[in-house]
Length: 94
Image (cartoon, rainbow, N blue to C red; front, side, top):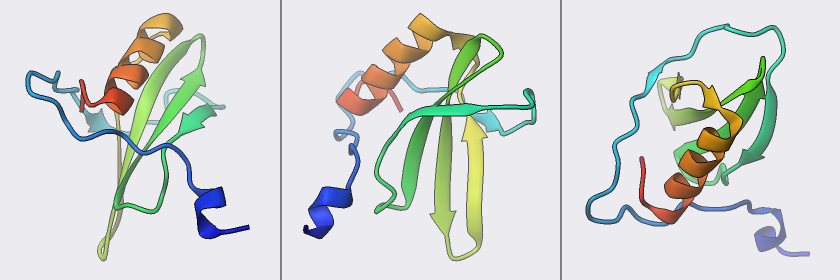
């Protein structure tokens, strides 16, 4: 096994005309949150597609020497959040 075997998806570079996601501070809106998918943690900014309380959202984690800063996209119906996740991975949203 090589280190590449442990990598997750990496978002593509941003494309011209991409959508800007409105990021808000992370809150404790739900008792239990399930991470459905995630991007690779080998870079300073990673993302998680999360589900809770019948909705879904993207969690953004920005790591620096000062610690981790966590923010969230709007909470959306699952199908809409899945589309936003795909747009993020393809470089059409960030």
